[in-house]
Length: 284
Length: 312
Image 1 (cartoon, rainbow over the protein chains, first blue to last red):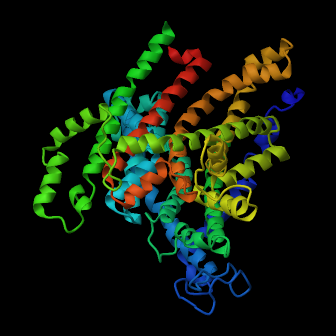
Image 2: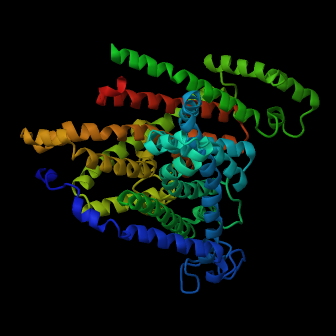
């Protein structure tokens, strides 16, 4: 245990390297660019139509003709996984964009006003995090009915709270600094102080969380898809694809395994990007 | 005495939270499509029968009255009857909830057993190969959906190697533990990733603190410093995070129980959603939220014990 002394953070060396983009950050960027290209132009990369049945090629193992094998209807799994990028990337963005913006704005407002507004908000936060997120989303989706739109609504009802809480904390720090006071002295309206001055300096935590949140929403979307509460078959969505293959897990493992790998890689891309942004802003 | 008033204050704080939980669940369930009477009788139900059942359930009264009845019922332990299974919801909860609690408890234990030593190891070997490997592995674990991990483990250790049963709950406590092992590992994976990551950075923050230098200069031995000074302070934020993650864990349990066919509360929840069994969904949501707020209470108290300054 004597290496405590030697295990100091490598201060200088780390700082010099700080300006360079780390390998993991670069990996995250590459993964996301590739994912976006696949999401926008799946047909350019998928060799087959993802929804066409081919009864001459049922449950075939991965081969050069079918890279990821085929399912019980003879559909090419590689094409289905590629086409699922469209839906799953869409889930990542659509589910999070509204709560991210609304939550950040509310957090900024509450943080600036403070007082009773802040304690009311605090209670809302307490109560929201008391519900298991997934249980609440499932409960809301069960009320509204299965499907992606209802999943977005369910996520939105809950998710803004997290952005609000992150921004609130940051705004409270920023508004005590001199430049905020200077803005007030100069007679700027609160909206100008919040939007032009405080918010740009307080958005980092929310921005980083947005990356994590998109990864979480891909996991959530595929989980609901797997349970039959999210995207509905025959739509190609990774969770739905995995559910399709679960009855063939012993005989045709490839149906479920490859879509899962796509989820892992995409999720990893978002987390690496989030970590990279944090690192970049810290060393600046 | 300071500690006693802190505990009391903290318990009082739960009251508005629990009230909010009740309001949300009440509103949520009233929004359910299709009225329960129609669900109970099917499409063939006659108008008169539907009206009779609505009256029985108190659904013909104004919302406010319904809500007061609801509160009174909840506090007397009456959560209504399951529409599909025709037994009191409380009976179902008593039967199913312990299964889920055992599963999540096992998962939490496995996660702590894994993440604490690995978090330490990674922090002390910062940026070396073993740190990078540990962090990389957990990063991948964090990006894996629970149901996918479950399926993979099920296929490999269950169907392929026959080391573990491929689902179910078994009979007797030992058999339960055996049946729940794979599901618990499934659930533990992402939790241990989160905890490990947090503990690692917390240790790195603490290890440079002056009091650690002081302890070292006093000539305290390495492990004494690590356990008494570094771990005790580093673990505080990890305890908070653990509390916050319990909700995630219970959500994961819903999925895990579906994958492994475990007759717990999560499985019941999914079945009830398909069957539109609204009293059960309501009872489950309430009880799971109350479990989470109790865990919050426990982690807050644990935190205060670790760092008495919090009590002020």
